[in-house]
Amino acid sequence: MSYKDTFIKACKKQEVDTLPVWYMRQAGRYDPDYRVIKEKYSLLEICQQPELAAEVTLMPVKKLGVDAAILYSDIMNPVASIGIDFDIVKNIGPVIHNPIRSSADVEKLRPIQVEKDLSHVIKTIEILAAELKVPLITFAGAPFTIASYLIEGKPSKSYIRTKELMYSEPAVWFQLMDKLGDMVITYLKAHIAAGAKAVQLFDSWVGALSPKDFQHYVLPTIKRIFAELNHLDQPKIYFPGVSSGELLPLLQEVEADVIGLDWRVSVPEGRRRLGSKFAVQGNLDPYVLTAPMSVIKEQAKLIIDQGIQEPGYIFNLGHGLFPEASIDKLHELTDFVHSYSTSALAA
Ligand code: CP3
Image (cartoon, rainbow, N blue to C red):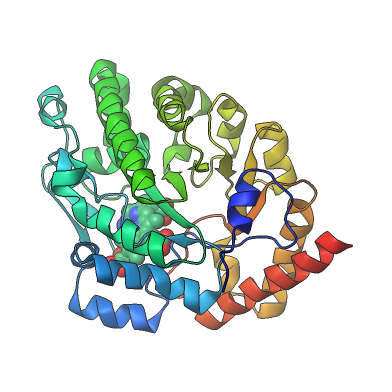
C-alpha cells in the first residue's frame, strides 16, 4: 500500500479526490481488543512501552480505515516532567495529587525535559513514523485546558477554581500560561523532529470562557505557540473544543493551518466566522453514532456536502469518541465518507 496523504493535502487546502477522515479519540474503549490491553496495563503504562503504544495507535487505523493515525498518549503525559503528580482514573479522568493553588506552586514548575522524561513518547513516534502508511498526528493539551486540570485537581464542570485564579491573580495566571506555553512548544517541536506529520493542540474546555476573557487571558499564549511552530512545514491544528463557536472570529491571527469545529456551528458558518485562511475539521456530533446507520449517513452527507464547497476540509467528529461507540458503525461511516465524497467531488 502506498502512502496516503489526503489528510495533509486537505490541511494545506489543496484539492483531493476523496475526503480524509479520522476520529478524535479513535484509540479507545469502544474497541474490545483495546479493552483487553487495558485490563493488563493503565494508560500511562501503555505509553511507557513504545512498541505497545505504537500497536494501540495502529489498531484504529487498521480497523476503521481512517486516513490519519493519532499518537496513543494523553494531554496530561508531559506534565509529569514539569513537576505535576497525577493519575488517570477510570471513568473520571486526570486526578492531580498536588494541584496548583498559589504563586509558589506555579514558581515550582520546571521546564519540560523531553529527552530525560519523555523518551518513550519520542521512541513511539519514531516507530510509528517508520511503519505507518498514513500521516501520524501527535498532540498536546492547550494551556487553558491543562491549567483547568492542574488547578481544579480533577475534571470540572464549572472551572470555578480556574476562573477564580485567573480573575484574582492575573500575574500568577499569566505566569502559568507562559510556563505551559513553553512546555507545549518544546514538546511539539520534539514530536515533529521525531517524525510527526501534523500536530493538534486540544483546547477541549476553553469554550467555558467568554470571548472577551478568551481574548485577554488565553489567546496571547495560543498565538505564541503557533507562531513558534509556524516555520515548520507540518500542518498544525487548533481544536478549541466544545461550545467554542463564539471564539472562532478571534482566531484569525493564530498561525494554525486547521481549526477543529464542534457540532454547534455548521461548517459554512464556521468558515464564515474564521475567514478564508484556515482549513476546517469536524464536526459530526459524536452521539449521533448512537443513531441507526441511515441517520448517521444522512447527517454525515450534509456535513460532507458543506465541507467540499471549498478545498481544506477534513471529516471528523465534533469531539472525541465515547466508549459505547460501535466499531462496525464507525467502519461503515469511514467507508461512506470515502465513497460519497469521491462521487460528490467528481460530480
Ligand atoms: O485520540 C486518540 O485516540 C489518542 C489518544 C488520546 C487520549 N486522550 C487517550 C485516552 C487523546 C488525543 C487524548 C486527549 C485528551 N485527554 C483530551 C482532549 C480531547 C478531548 O476529549 O477533549 C482530554 C480532555 C483528556 C483528559 C482525559 N484523559 C479524559 C477526560 C479522560 C477520560 C476519563 C475516562 O475514563 O472516561 C482521559 C483518559 C483517556 N485518555 C482515555 C484514553 C483512551 C480513556 C481511559 C483509558 O482507556 O484508560
